Structures are given as C-alpha cells and as structure tokens.
Amino acid sequence: MRFDVFTIFPEYLAALELSLIGKARGQGLLEVAVHDLRDFTTDRHRTVDDSPYGGGAGMVMKPEPWAQALESVLDPHADAKPTLIVPSPAGEVFTQALAHEFAARQHLVFACGRYEGIDERVLDWAADHYTVRPVSLGDYVLNGGEVAVLAMVEAIGRLVPGVVGNPESLVEESHADGLLEYPVYTKPAAWRDREVPEVLLSGNHGKIAKFRREQQLRRTVARRPDLIAALDAGSLGKADRNVLWELGYAVVDRQLVKREAAT
Ligand code: ADE
Image (cartoon, rainbow, N blue to C red):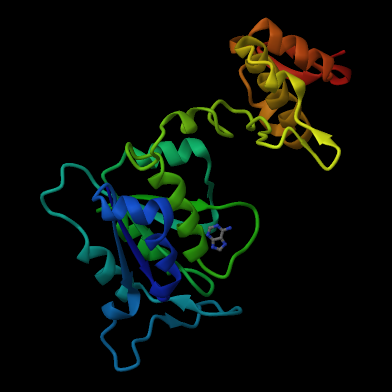
C-alpha cells in the first residue's frame, strides 16, 4: 500500500519513521513518501498562499502548486483512481470504519492544508483524477492537516495485514465491534490497596469473557452513549440486553433507548 503526503512542513511527518509504521515501511509493507509542496512552485519565493477573494481573515493556498503536486503522483497505468484525503475540520469525521475502508485501497494521497484552507477549485479539479474525501479528525480546529495525517496514516496503516504482529489485538480493541475496549490489568495482583478483579485470576475463560463484555457495555454507556444508540440491538445476545436493561436501556425497534424515554 502506498501513501503520498503533501505538506509545507515535511519534518512534521518524521514520526512516521518510528515504531510499527516505521518498521512496516522498512519491511516494504507500507510505502510512505512525504513531499514538500513548495517543490511544486515556480516563483523565486516558493509562494503557496495568497489573500482570499471576497475578503476575510488569513490566507488561502494557491491552486497551481497543488495541481502540479497532485499530478506528480498519478500513475497512468493504475487500475483505479487513487483516493485523495484532504484533512479539514469541514470534512466527514474519521472513524474506525473509515480507517478500514481506506486500508482496502492501494494508493492514498494526503493534501495537508494550512492557513484558511486550499482553493476549492483544486478539489473540483482533483475529482477527475481522484476519489476526493475531505476528512476531519474531530470537532475541533488544528493549525493544519499534518497532525490529522499522522493519526490517519497510523490508524489505516496498522490495519494492513502484517503491520501489527498479532492480528488478534485488532479484534478486541475499542471500536472493533461498536463498543469501547474492556479495562486491562497486569501484575502485581494487588497494588496500592487496589486489587485486580478476582474473576481475571480464576482461569475460567467463560466467566472472564462474560466479565469483559459487561465491562465493555458499562464503559460505553458511561463514556460514549452515542455509540450505544448506534448499535443494532437485534444483533445483541440476551446477556448483553440484560446488562443494558440494568444500565437503563430498553430495546425499541432494534434500537437501544433510555428507559425513561421509551415509556
Ligand atoms: N485541519 C484543521 N483542523 C482539522 C481537523 N479537525 N481535522 C482534520 N484536519 C484539520
């Protein structure tokens, strides 16, 4: 799988040389190329921005360097259009489901905007050559797309087969099944007057699985009730429904609703 990243701060992406993603690059599982957008300018000052038409604060990224940059990584022999991910607080929200969708692609290109953003015509033009996806990391504003790209390349790259050594760790983690992960513990069994839940020391795998599932449900209800509302209750087992009933939820038309609201 290939990633191309365009930015005016290539050093920002140096972290992609570290840890699992860096190792996967070394093994040839992932190809990551970081490009300086200013290399695609033609003027002496290597200008990438200009003032906005219509007025307003800040500067806008000029279209010409972006078109040159995005053309430079197009492969005329590719079977499918590459995907152009444009990090932006005005994009669709990045989720684990989106990470899986992108991990199935051959070629991802990231366009890191700075200032007030990229001239909108670049995205219109790029749609002839790319599948264009403006994507937000969340409902807050960063100074540019670089931090978002670090997060997305890591989340996507680790789903590529072979990148994470033990594929089982991808099955049990948060968001894998629409719920948050259960809490984890290691030795010592007692630490500063706090004990590891006894069931985890029991060796009874059935009981441990039941305990962990209940913890997942409890934690998700407490921290992310929006994820509970998004579950397909029809696919939950009786034990899950019982725990959720205890936590104040009822099933109405395959959806989980707060019991007060249901009556
Ligand atoms: N650039 C600025 N803010 C951003 C956000 N929340 N997500 C992605 N890219 C951004």
